[in-house]
Length: 115
Image: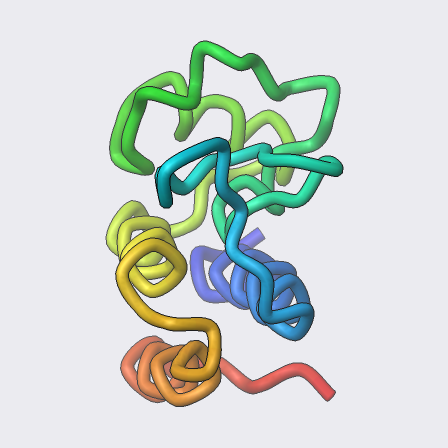
């Protein structure tokens, strides 16, 4: 599978996750890979339950353990930079701004917006 294809798969999952407009938080605005009611962030959405470990919560998307969980879940690791961009959008922007920011990422990485 090409890097472009795995980037598109990861982006599609994150974009679809963005549609619920809910941040994944544990407490005090701390974003989480898995939050209340199994709500997950954009990178957390890429990690299948069987590859998730609560110890990931204190790590950024660039951490080896997080990347391994994503890689095991998707079969191949998307661009590390893309993972960091997705995490940044989820964590730093308001949900009402996610769509605009994700469109910028799609353009930058030559990805299509899922329908």
